[in-house]
Length: 316
Image (cartoon, rainbow, N blue to C red; front, side, top):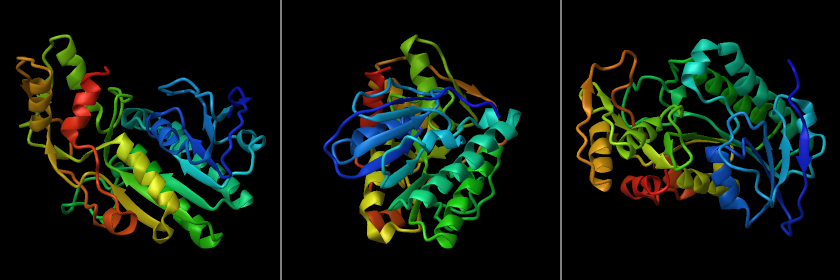
């Protein structure tokens, strides 16, 4: 494997504890940085392959892949790790499953080795709802069967299992968070779950029709990335979260028709969406149970979908 270019940028902060965020310039990583920066010194490792923002001035930044040991050589003492770096394209995982596995499985393993070596206080792993596959029952609980339908879902499941195994073998405190349909102003059409929001808004902005596949009554569980960042913060602090797997979602099913109708209403658009044949392999209904998140983290969503959609419409 060829090594990526390596660079490091230093900063000085007053905070006593340090959090390393992998993929810190992506959607989840960046909002996690924003949420945590006033509480901790922040280090970010990102290879810039899918970064969505510029490097902040108040972080220690390393440009490299998490698979490379060189990424960790110049870090200060790390107290906590939030592992958000991943290859997230389902389509790319299907066309190149080896690349997907290198990023999501081998990258996680290299990071776990580092976490074990420096004895971090807690390792927060961001998994994916793609690990569940077709729902056998609703709402989806953390003990729902795992039958992923793509190499991406499988690689996230395998990396999650490695995290769990390291917690057992090496006494590493870990928390696995499983976000559902994350959305934010930083998302794009390639995002595996909430990309539909971006596609609809982009069409509405230029007055173009967009397709609704099937009857539009398919449901998803949309959660704003700011709420995901808040769940990560709670997971860093909660003693009862240690070695737990916790869903992060709204717990509310929201249909594609509802999404379309609300976006059109919020934007005062009279576009008539096109009805199209249902796509093969699409999951029809999906939403999660947040009972565990409530009990362990005291977490419920704070940003209703309508509020989040208004924010995105004003920013894209």
